[in-house]
Image (cartoon, rainbow, N blue to C red; front, side, top):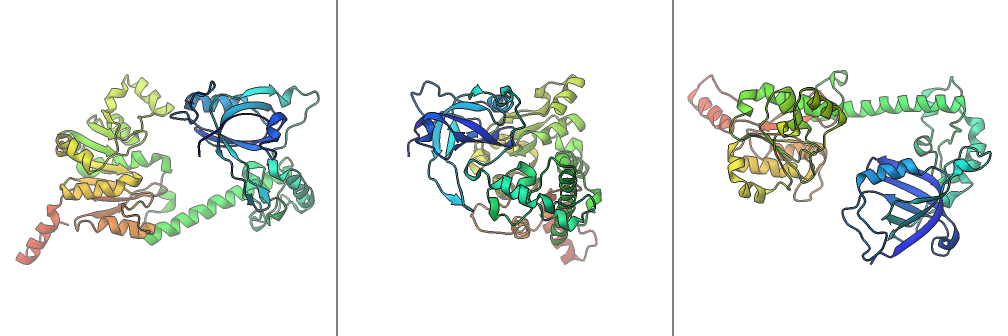
Length: 420
């Protein structure tokens, strides 16, 4: 269906920030838009590579900085005019609440009236346009049931996670969990208890899942998942040595995203020969840029990048780079993981991958354990090691394909120096 250009006006009643690049803003329609969107609409705020509507005066590609600008400029309760295109106009019901049509933005919103400019204004209470009144009624009805400061953790577990995180719940009166008034001391205390308990439960689940995969690294010995590139590079350098990794054309970092692996190898271990292969541009964090500035290094010190998808065709087209690589690595490479292992095995290239999401090329359904077994079964010399960081921390690696053959020959000859 061809997108239709729209110019809509409405009051912002709810904002959901999912990341720096994505947010959803719920509006209650006003003025001329009531005829087409009587129940309100939802604005999807995200960067666009290209415009969906042609020959439209306000249409332009939106950049990531525009998302940040918009979220800083508009506030709850503001009346705003937006320009965009209907992305989904089908109306459906979920738990008795009408789901809003989604509008994909194509110009920065214009604020017509600010909530903060109203005389004697109170703090605007967020709500869902299709469920006005439901949350307030639920809150008033259940405030008397709010846990006191001495409530047990089992009571805080009954809190509605949607209400805790966003101050709204689409289920309204149909929600079986408690909606507290988070402006009270009791509500804030219960929220803190709920968060502590949820974190403890999540860590327990992670420990159980890791143990099922054979991970024996203690939970309290694991670093935060944000340090996974640092931990992985420490292990890689310890296993192969910095000199070996710098041989030939150096390390190939496949689907390396922001470029954390190449940053750690270059800055911490002095291995500048690392080629990042990822269709997205390298993007360093503020702390990484500070480190480069402190050490008087430019971004070119991290090695080159090829903005491309990794597959067999890429290997054929970059044969010299592939042949000269000291090692091929993939840290949470998602869809590229199986291709890395398959191509490395086929071409007898040393590799190390840390699988994350299950993405078999065949599309088959697998559990996390089956996924690891499937990848490791591609060659008998592939080994498995668990690294000390939270999250998916199993590294599958093979640095010497002849080790299995040598071990078999030694076994047949009765030798005692078998190497596995």
